[in-house]
Every structure is written in C-alpha cells, then in structure tokens.
Length: 322
Image 1 (tube, rainbow, N blue to C red):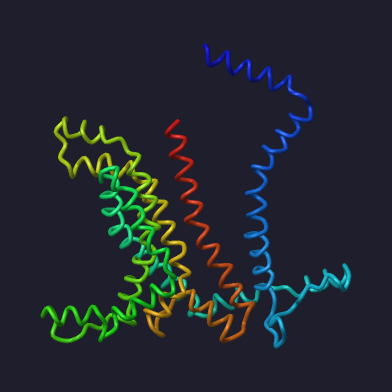
Image 2: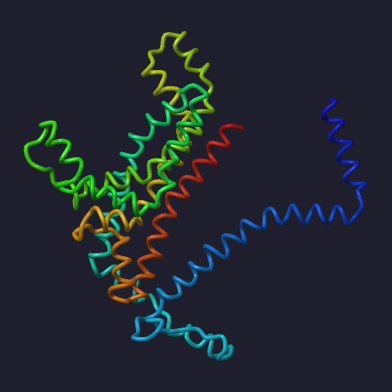
C-alpha cells in the first residue's frame, strides 16, 4: 500500500511539473529509443542498401568498376535514369555457378563444426569459472579476455609457428617420443578448426559464464537431497538453465565464423573453400564488385536466420518467465 501511495504521489507531482520540463523529459525518453535506430540506420541499413544497389549493377572497366552510378549533381532525372538498368543478373549467375553454392555450404559446415567444438571446450571453462571462489573469478575472467589485448592477426600467425611441420607442436611431440615423424596439420581443415576455436573461445565463454554465475546453487543441492546424481542434476537443471548463454555463445561464434577470411587463408591453405575467401577474390582479384556484392547480400540473409531464431527463442523464454 505504501509503495502504491508513493507511486501515485510521484505521478501527481509529474503531472504538476512545468510544461517545458515535461516536454524535455518526453524528448529525452524518445532520444533513448531513437539513437539505437539511428545507429542501425547509418551503420547497417545504409551500407546494406549501397551493397545491394551495387549487386544489381553490371561490372565495368571503370572507377568504380560497376555501372550504373548515381550522381545527384546531374539532376533528378539523371539520378533516376540508372534505375532502369538495374537487374538481378548477378543473382541468377550465382545459381548457375556451383562454386558459390559450394562455398556457402562449406562455410556453414565449417562454422557449425567449429561452433560445436568451441561449445565443448568453452562450457567446462565457463562452468569452472562460475563454480570457482568469488575472489578468483575476476582473475579468471581477465585471463579469458587477455588474448584480446593482442592483435588478432598476430595470434593467427602464431599458430603457423606452432602447427607447421617444424613447428613447436611437432618438435614437442617428437621430443617426448609420441610421434616418429612430423604431423601435417597446417593447411588442413584441422588447422582451421583449431584457429577458429582458439580465436572465438572468449565469445563462447563470456555469455556462458554470465548465465552460469547467476544460477541458484540451491537447486543443485535440492536435487542431490532428493537422490539425483550429479550428472543427472547437471542435465536436468544446470544445462537447461544455461541454454540462453549456450544460444548466445553459439551465435556469437557461428555468425563471424561463416564469413571468416583470415583464419582459412593463413591456416587452411589455398585449397580451402569458404565464402570469405570467395568474396576477397571477387572484390580484389577479379574486380567484379557486382557479383561480390550479390554474394555478400546472400551471406547476410543467411546469417539473419539464426539471429531471428535467437530473438524468437528469447521472446518465448521471456513470455514463459512471466
């Protein structure tokens, strides 16, 4: 009752406040909502519209290497005239060449396998961090974030020195007598998986740790008191409650891994087929910006699907929590 009275008094005081203050408060509330939408507009929708427009153009030996080009200085009529030249020929071309389809499938498969491996490695790490003493958690969290203090490119190059035939890993295994000849790991899919798991492991650990750290440990104690074994308690209580962190971590790993270019190029060798390398070749080697833009547009649409699935899952979980 006291809380209700306080809320009613606050509402009456707000109604009695001067009109300029109420207008200012309303403007601030609207700005809080508008700013994120403006950010998405200028840094996502506008660049995407430009890329989509280029994908509907035709390649040309010019600068920029495509046509039509819109020039506002030529007037309104000259601005709308190139619209008639836009076509979906580049998208039709992508369906006729198996290279692009194979690149999409290979990228999704590699990203999916890498995401599963990252989850298998990251979940025990996050679980151990969440169950560690509270005094040690900040230090463990810092150790997870510590690789971000080093350049991503340098970290990938370091793996070349580790995985090459005369690298540190083979020298160590030869020294302890585990193998008799160097292993061929570099320029294989195994090296790509190692590079992706290492590079994106913090993106999996952090959301998992955030979810597991907030979990009520009394639920596990209650399950143990009722005769549930630790493994059963984990699969019936811990893992279901950590699903939001699992989904968030998987998306944070899967989405950038699909379009990854540096790791496949440095660790996978020239025979690795991924959509990121295909985009690079189309943009910089073939100078075919329209086709490359069409490839990028389809890739973006492919990545929107897991994002929409995550949002749908989050909305359902919030409704169930109510």
